[in-house]
Length: 97
Image (spheres, rainbow, N blue to C red):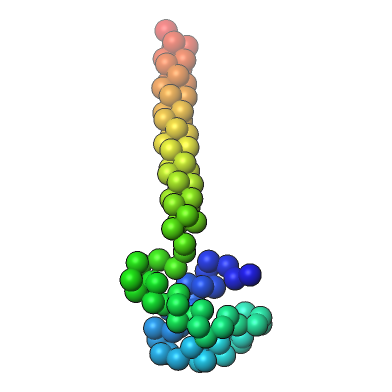
C-alpha cells in the first residue's frame, strides 16, 4: 500500500512529466517498489486538481482533527511552561526577601 507521501509524489511527477508511464518508471527507480497503475495516477492527479488533495474526505477530516488535537496540546504545554516559569520566578522572589 502506498504512503500519502508516495501518492503526493506521483501527482507532482505527473504534473512535471505529463505521462503516467514516466511516473511509473520514476516511482520504480525512486522507491524500488511496484508502481501504482496508470489509471490511479491519473485519478489522483484529477482529484488533486479538482479538490486540492489526494486523500479521501474521511481521511482528510481525520488528519485535520489530529492536527487540531496536536495544536491544542502544544498550546496547553506552552501555557504550562508559562505557569511554571511564573511560579519559579515567584519562588525566587520569595527567597530574596
